[in-house]
Image (cartoon, rainbow, N blue to C red; front, side, top):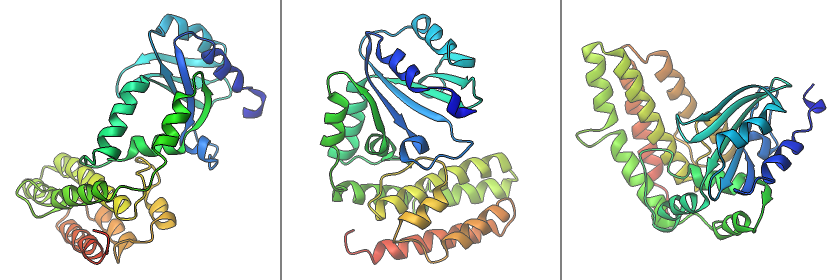
Length: 266
């Protein structure tokens, strides 16, 4: 059924709006590994105003459900196409996007997890429309080797957050479990994993792909992995809320530190 909907005509309609500077396809659709559940992640770079009133009639021709101008994360239209496939359109300013890239890639700043996601988004997107060639130029500008200072800063910051400093995640999880605060255990474990995977991708000089399919992506793309990578994750999830979970967290930190110590480029 999906083949009966010519989605390229939607991109053309959006590109015809005066405020649209560029359009890019991201995610698994751009990478060519989409499955039947894969949605469309589309990034529309705007200059000036592209109002909800302008967008809604364009989308209505292709979608049977629309939530226009959601602002939960970025400015988005979250829709369901008439063939049943979900469509997320994210509206961005290209100068703002460029400033975020510069802060990470050129200035070497690290975050608490997900540091290089926007760089990954730029590197892996497929440009559908580029009025003045600015998005393609930005893609070319940031097609550079992984900066050593960025690698160092991501690993240093996020390893400390995992364990070894007073506010580290391992201690936060331990205290929450001792209190029987399982909501906090879950919350802090999620933050722990954000930093854990940020270190792994930086160690392997891979840009962070986001929150989906991380285990399989690490196994297929990362040469350097902790000794019991899968076993520790399985054990952590199996024992997240009992006393054994802390042992797996300790093993994950220790084994990750070991491969960082023995990496010659850190």
